[in-house]
Image 1 (tube, helix red, strand yellow):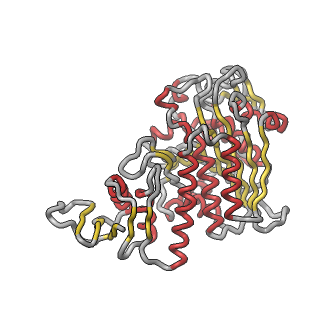
Image 2: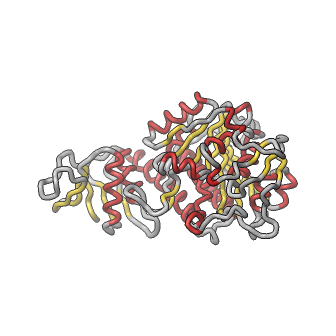
Image 3: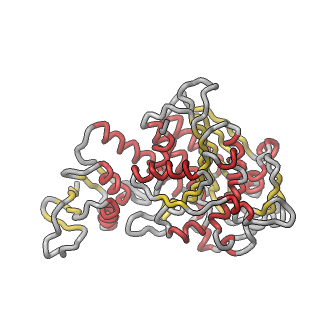
Length: 423
């Protein structure tokens, strides 16, 4: 098994004094202690074909995790043994890796294997295994969604051969149904997104198995928080569907009437994520949770703004946003606030409804990510107090890069778990 050390020394001259990596009889040395450099070194070693690594010498826990992030493959198995540390720390790293790899595996799954119901049941199984006896759930499917008033999820998923599904999962370690819900998570679970009648190009569609990345990340983060001793009641709502085309598909110009009385004109069927999240946010409001967070691979605009290096965060409640960003800083994860004000609610106007779901121009026009967040803010309770919206621009790395293997990243898992565990 290849040994990898952190070296405080510069590389020897034959490697170049600024070299990130060098090798001798003891194994590989990484010559920079900064977390991004460690992750980059791990990716280089993985690209060399190394599959079995022992971290040796002195490593901080954050450094070990950075190495693990870069070393994890998009397929196949690798073996990573942690450096010496207290047993509790090693157990924490193993639990974090287990949950992150679950997120990666699910997000990277073939869309023919992972449909809406399969996604929901995978989340139930994963969380029930981690918290036996503390998980209950309810599934609403197909026309049952329409009967319950969840018009957005039904409209998006009604053309799929597999029915749309809303999962309402309750983690309640107190076993007391009167226990207040501390937080409610709402995840976009579009298991494949063709764009509907606003059809994507092949290039834009090829990675759309990852459009359920928000659902996977939130379930994984809840699982990780459970392994770390989460004692508060948390609800998870996953809005799962395929966005496909047939004679039943949602049409441009169609108007949806949501349970809170807001009417929405469909001007872009590829702006489907906000339609299903609107239902999820309304369901979250019914839980009475003081903190509501939704997460979605929602807009290309967020990716263009942040180049896939950060997850975007939006909020009307700036205190709640700053508190979340403090968790992100402590967890060494990359989030960046993008603008959201109440006037963004008016940025998707309609002649025929209270709002449209986008603008009928490519990418939703300028400020598309903020406009999407403004649309969602119409469905957040208490005028957005305690509500956070994550646009997951760094959830998936299409072809891999110097830090990540191709596929899902699970960036945000640690921050979300930390945020869930706050008093």
